[in-house]
Image (tube, rainbow, N blue to C red):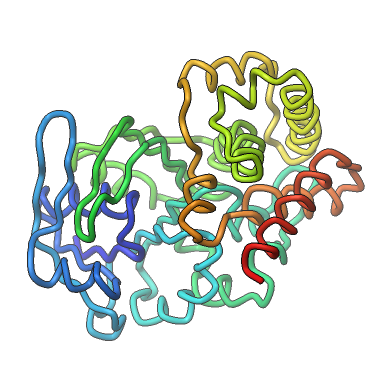
Amino acid sequence: MKIAIVGAGAVGGWLGVKLAAAGHEVSVLARGATLAALESAPWRLETADGAIEARVTASAEPAALGMQDLVVIAVKGPALGEVAPALAGLIGPDTIVVPAMNGVPWWFLLAGAGECGPTALASVDPDGAISAAVPLGSIVGSVVHVSASVPAPGVVRLKSGNRLVLGEPGGGTDRLAPVADMFAGAGIDVERSASIQKDIWYKLWGNMTMNPISALTGATCDLILDDGLLSGFVLRIMEEARAIGQRIGCAITERGEDRNEVTRRLGAFKTSMLQDAEAGRRMEIEQLLGAPQEIARKLGIETPNVDALLGLIRVFAAARAA
């Protein structure tokens, strides 16, 4: 299969190296030091079981890569609007697109969800550029369960996890099976979802609080959950998200306290948003908080705690950029 990876970071590298090592024709849209590294040496994935290396074609120009059978979008949410125009040269009428990203994606409500009819999300696709570049009918949604980092350009270090949940928005076509089989054949632990929106919402339920609070405070998750005031704030946000989920077909029956115990068992770790804040990178604010708030407004649901955290992290980001 002819595959393009858009975003040669940790997730893109985890998937890209494994797919290339499995014999697929993999190309990468990259730039800067990463482009130089992939042009001169194999892409390298370091795991607890040893390293995997694979040669790929890398270019900064989509036209040089050509039309693809599969496009994996693995850029951070804030960058996708800028990248979207470049996707046109990669996506044909039969191309399948797998967005492998955090938070609520731009397509989340385009197929309708519960009480929300088909509608766009201005918070994550304000000018419609992403929807225009990626047809809804091409998408196979995903949820990534992996912890990885990029210690050097062209090198990805897998810390834990190897799981990829895949499902079609709204379901009903035959696109999922061959894509799931392809990833599984490359050594990825694949789970086929009957409701990918629900799986996305459940992951969001766990990280829409820890990520921004850790970025604001500089604290690891154990310190956040050990503080009674903050842990209470987290639970109130989770209850607001649960209420939204109930209305969009993404019901959550688990207690917030139980979900947070799962986080607590992970120990003193830095969230991806805290790492982005420390590195001066843009944070996935709208994907984690802006989109849930927008969905709540469409449904007439009040979210005072989500609103408070969203305002805090937006101002924090603006002050750092000033």
